Length: 537
Image (cartoon, rainbow, N blue to C red; front, side):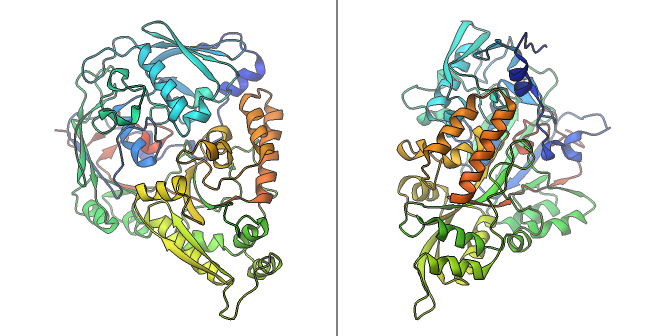
């Protein structure tokens, strides 16, 4: 298995293959493996609190979906702990000197779970559909002109402009390759493959009992000989986080995810349990406060800045996230140090300054002490809901009455991205491995005329920012690219359509009989092909 990048100009080569200095890239002890010899057989049972809306992260990269999807459906590449690309469905790849043609040689003999051959036609369909309808695919693949398939085991991605981050975007969860014969180009979201998927991965979908569990079984014809080790994997949905922890402590499940942060210290004292709160170096998840800038009050930057000053993010980190999160000072992850600039995101907690800005904006306190009222919504999740409650209290201290809007994921999507029936929104967004993929969508004005989930909930519109993102998307000079990203941060930090809050931890707790639980820089979106449990059969 080889990877070839012949005679690529130096700047583009450096940008394509340089390993990013990701602080979260080192995998946890459970990911690094065990000195013991893996045992075949057995069942891994995982419990989480939120059920996904579908099982394939084809046109929705929601974390709940991608964590299951990557066990069933694979991408062209996988990535090691230093984010270097490794073969998966592609065994080798080469890039033309001008950076406009990526040629992937595909793995021979791979079968879909229904027995049909995996071919380049599946790659062409998958990437073309994600370019048209994928929330992140529309950005990542914006420069994709077409996918040529000169033979069944060769896929050539033809670009109209260089895309220096493309080789870091082809993971199983991010840009999965799906079976073209199970979809229609007219409306791929209606495919039965979204809820009863077939893939090429180590596990075969067996059943989805809504409100209860998803059952996966070992793929007996997996292309990687001897894997997976597990016979079965069960993902249980238990809405009560306390119930998840109780099930882990009772030995009824092997892995607990999305558990209450308050429980982690106690679980760490359990001799049978290993706690893992590794930060996902692929997703770089963070919580953001998004302002609906079309709201007549929130349209004023000084009001947005006042609200930022009213929020004690260190207290948020301590009380809501139990010190297992870090305050975020820019939408660009600080681990991307050459791109990072937090110089204009300077809004320290200062109630007096917040009150001053609100007075100057023309919203004095009324006789009842209130200035105006706003609605707060949040992406579903216990920590996000508690963050909304924290924000409501913070706004109350500066005379803003806040009403909380709750609901499931479907109502969240409708309220924020379709009906736009919100004022303030606490969202969880992946900042990812490159600002074009993870950060641009937060500010991209295309999301106003072409609305999609996860794109520009604020409806921010700044042509200069759009243009800087367009330039950075194709810039192969690393110094110029860094300057473009820094200029973007300086602008959006002053105008503040979105206020970064804290990183979002994704803790899990595992029975110590589980080994090699993580095998990807994307942590929970690994494929479990290496995972095994003591006792086996």
